[in-house]
Image (cartoon, rainbow, N blue to C red):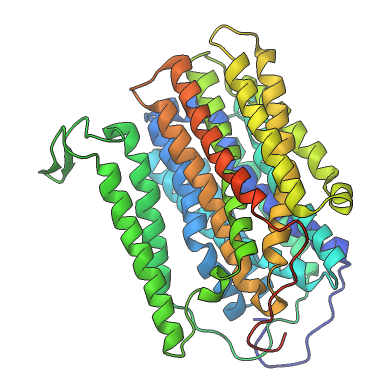
Length: 493
């Protein structure tokens, strides 16, 4: 491992660009995995004998696993080493992709895709951003590196439906997982050029109790929201049964709120736990100091909502065109292509835009463009409307989200000194993936609900996404217009 005592570390033979390529490609494939499943919803449900809700749960649990384990993954980066954990995460991800490709049923698909790919992503993504920081000597080059990696993530999420649709239609949805495993193998080979000197000084200890509490809290919140598609949002539409015992009878309070309440109590316990550990002079899973930076907190809110809107919209449109309009996987991917183009164009321009406007301004304008795009999807798209009615709205959403992705990451990461980059990187990635999970869970549950069908379910889901986008816009307007220098940490950088 990189930080064990021994001979002097070798100097990396890779150039900054050579280091950046495998990091960006790793972020691309992980983000791609979160959205490419959307176009194959009908194929997977038919092949595995499950429902749209079953596939929705699989996708939501994948992003939830990432969100729940990203912070522990960040801590393990300092314990086991950056490149060590990066490659092990890639290996776990690749194995999960192969298991998912051979899945005979929904349970094995959840094991391979939702759990192993999710765990692998949680292990490999924190090192991506930390290595980008280590190999970027100044703020300008660091912003450029974050921009390339964040753009790769956004493009992966947006391109997932089209690429996944082509592979699913031409071969099979299973082949899409084989392609992921191949890409992961390429990244592992490229990563051999990266030689990181490792974290110097004593290794931190992993806070097991904090890990369990945070993961369990997020699990109950997201899984609780997913119950709405079966039991309804407010009152239970059927008996909620555990084993043979009716826990909540039909007509009682929906299990959604029971699960969410348990989750919130566990998260409150988590925050009490880490505060208690700090007071006792011990090192918790996450420092409470990270939540005392107003700029970073607002940046995290915008990050969460960006991914909530992007993944939520991708799922909603995919379900709508497959179940209401009867489109196949490649047609669904083509429908979502304008969003891919929008993200690609705005991400390519992100560097130039950042030199002309503050990060806060770009985030505000990005949310405004995104809201306009969702409104156009509401106004123009009908069950019998032309497919081109999707184009302007999806393109604007892609442009808006693409403009914001890099800016939000830069705002959050730049709010802290280098010694805090490991922790804030894990928190940042966790919040982003939680947004993806909530987007699929909340907007997805609305469109698959039996309370609203056809165009009405689609419209209600988009209204929900507009509501969250407005919250993101409000947070963006609260960000300072000029960069805030990072607060000094407790120890030497």
